[in-house]
Image 1 (tube, helix red, strand yellow):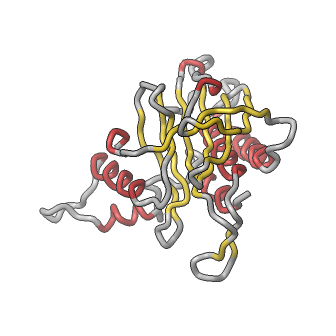
Image 2: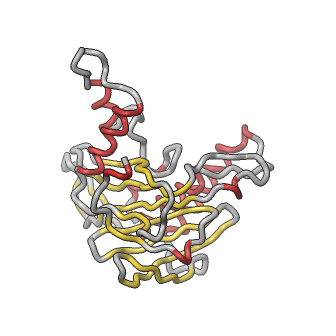
Length: 244
């Protein structure tokens, strides 16, 4: 499994440092961009534009739920290497997932997040000083599992203990993702671009996670709550405009 994905996923939402996170390419671009009148090019609209541009610059196809899903869609977060090459990103569907500690509140959320991970072989880092492991379906499973956990907060858990709980649970998610053939996972076939595709699937009290590989040279992960995974289908995104 790609260890770099594990590092990237240890952000508040589990996918990667967000577009506005310090040190991210998008944050650096935002800091240096200026509007025509010399004012900083900031604000939600500018951030959304930069996120859309980053997604459009990927060298692989993005995947989302197919047309059977008729609810809202949005671009979430994207991760890129230092040289700007996009590694993975997420597309949200339905409600915007949020951490909710109130008893019963999380059950009211209905969302699914689809993660697309570029299929990459074993390769050297850009500066030639190290090696990045190949991405696999486990990479997508790890990102999906940590993403779900980032939007989970057991109602009985004290706020001061959540970080410890999250550390423990994300470590467990990493171990589970590294053993997709283990007893914690079951087989599930879902359509990808209309073709039946095998996925690894598991449920927990917090929601569900699935991961597999598509014919288009990418790995697909997904997590959700309130929407059944068994009726989902995935398709390549031809036009990102409706998501921006």
